[in-house]
Image (tube, rainbow over all chains, first blue to last red; front, side):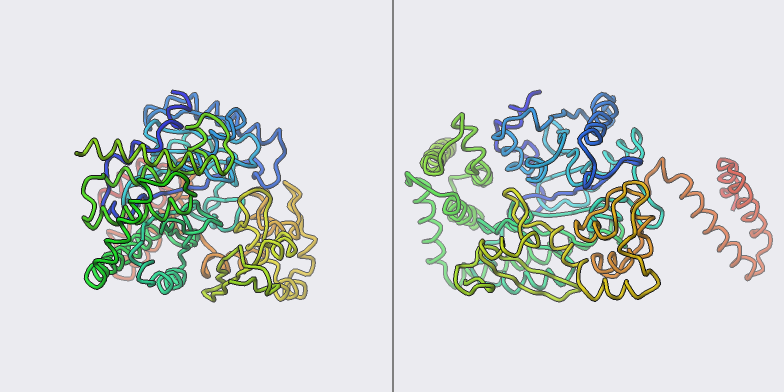
Length: 358
Length: 185
């Protein structure tokens, strides 16, 4: 397996099995922050110490017989092209932080891309499990399996009172960050989102854009995750988030119903205008593309558009990101060239998707 | 939207700061964000990081002043004996240097953890399997002792004797025998 396996398809194979409520919840993700005992944290360690962590991971995890958990492939980020790193970020396999400024950074990936273990990011390792739809409990189970497997090989920094010790005080305790990626065009169009986000914040949850910290909610995609990691069990954290997400799903569904009822023709107009743009534009910026993709996705969910699969839209969302575009083009592009390239790529993909279905 | 710092340029960074449930929205332009220094900007395209916010959170004046006069007069000179990170640096960076920091800064940690974790300071979740064996054992003994007490209160002496034996076996480290005894209950 080479990186091309991961970099060539915008779609991760775990997408193929659509999970519960996958029309609104694109994915559920669990991340466990873990540090190894007796090693300094990435905050202050020097190059040699970072390398020691890398060597430890190579020796214990890469070479270890991983049949219990399935094969993992190790990629050292320094050996990857900047574009390849960006592609991994755009697929949510690694964090922007890991790609940018981590010493001896690496990631261990499973073939279906469900599992990614980031090495030498903010913490020594972060075990990530990502699945389709709203399945946080299932994702936690899988992540726990990998966590137990790592702990069999390497001692963790753990304290009876504080739990898993982390460099960042916001991760200590369970080290668990659970998050869901939601597509909420109904709540945005009805402007209810402005009331819902503060309410979610009140519950100790965080709302962000598609690429996490600091990114804005492009394409009506919101990431909701837990803030508190200490003093709550993993099960409670995941259950609390799940129940909030279920509420938001219900709100989104009723917003969509209300929209269809009150402004059916406006909505249909919006959906088809956006489809028109995607099918015909020769130059398209990423934000416009994301907005149109969101509209068309909604149109597919509502049954306005029948000859395009929803998965094509999900794929386009990733495919139209700068890293992927340039990887497809075979090299770096100027922003203007990207916009041209993006438009042609969307047209090609939609044309072939419509032929497949006609 | 206009930047709330200079009231001139359009705001480019928008974020919400929540401290103990109190929400504050901040809208600021690139230039003012840079002038504000590392509270707002981090190198690279990531822009804004939670740790910058965190260090702001930890840095608030009343907290340090209160610490200066409280039981820990030299809180700022505190230094981790393992990784040599000082408490002051920890507050500035918003991150620990190593596991030992948690021990070294123990007395000053509770208020910080409370702020970040909705009032919580102690872990109640997963215990690592291998490392946690002794922790499991201690917890088991503690649970059995409280069971023993309630059995004695209820004058269930036969049962109590079995539990007592189980505790003794566990304390000797003979888990297999203790489990057998437990099964007789």
